[in-house]
Length: 119
Image (cartoon, rainbow, N blue to C red):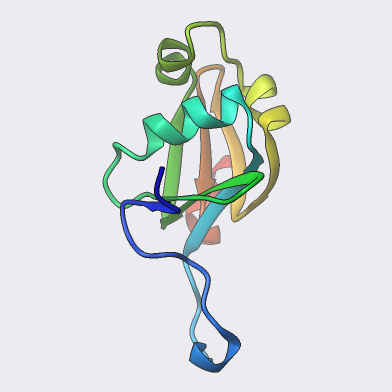
């Protein structure tokens, strides 16, 4: 399997970084490589605007604005139940605001103002 799916690597050498005084609306999750993480990554790689990066022991899923994880879609890909709570256990870390919208949907928001409607 290639190191990355859907586009080039998210990682850059320090010399290639450009620092700008702008607000990023990116969001994403990092997961330890597992059966669950691979099923989630496989599904999310089919979604527009999502970048999946495979590393030796981890998988990154990154997007702009918001990433919506549907538990029923993940369960179908995985072949067994997936709940928002099991999903959170599968993620090592995330950036952006994670909101459980309902029992089937977890959304990561890169735009904090959009996330505020769920406060």
